[in-house]
Image (cartoon, rainbow, N blue to C red; front, side, top):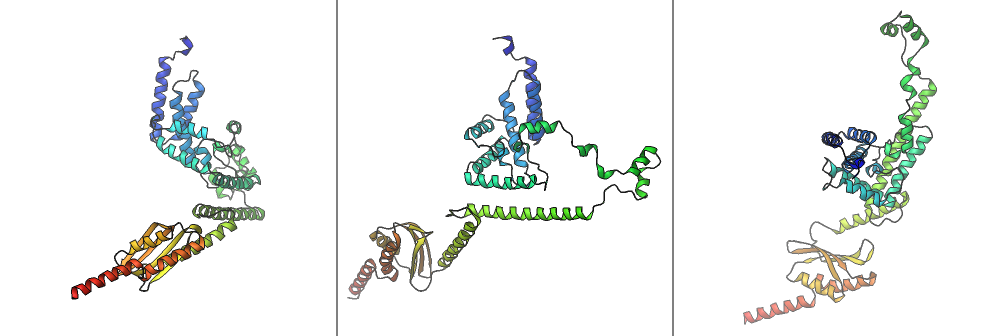
Length: 386
């Protein structure tokens, strides 16, 4: 082994102290300080030692900082949670590498499991093209408004190219050095001459802020109105996004299709609620229909008098038409039974007609098995009387 490959004890002890410091800061959730220490350590040391541990700590900081921050339009920084640039390709290899760094079996730093959960949540959203496209569209709309000069862009640093960050770090905004709204010629002369203090200047009516003109007031009012309108659109878009995830049979993603499918699904649920009553009715009834527009599943709701072997008769009747119950809800009150069945093997309207003909005698109590039982009961009564 060459002398250049040998790690000095001082270097190793320094790395251990840095790791202990990072561990303490992570416990207090000071993620920014930990990331700053790791970046400085990477710059000053020539031989990189314990890179894996520093990368594990840095991965925790990157993910949790992105999870705690919000973009200027109020959205979460899901790209930052998986350490990729805005609108960049979301690759499975990068995500697997990140999850390997956050694996709690190897990463013993605090909050490694929390960071892994946040990264998994971001991946579950961005790995789905429709959700990723909707998220990118919301960010792009805000960027277009920023490019028109309506507001200052303040994305998280994971959304800004690294070269731009390096340029901005070496610059100081002019507003830190000079503010034109806080200075007047008279105030400058008085300060230079030492003839007046700040209290005298204020008592003489000097203003530290520039008065707003009518044009500026109109611009401020217009900006407030545009901000309120933007927030309203964001709320509406978020509600539409929620509907897109709830509706089961949604094909088109535009707003008109979402509203139409919402109305249709609401009417269907309303009809289902009407079919499901709290207690069985006093009259025998039988209703059949397709479930959720699926031609292979049928919903059967019937109410009849309770008797022994009722469900066996129902099963035999369905077996006669090659149908099978996959779900059943039964309620019995005061000698009456109400049953809601989800039946499989019903082909179209013709299958519904056959199933109804087979179940109707059972509901009315005129099936062959029930008549046979009644005849047997009658014969027993006659023998007892004799």
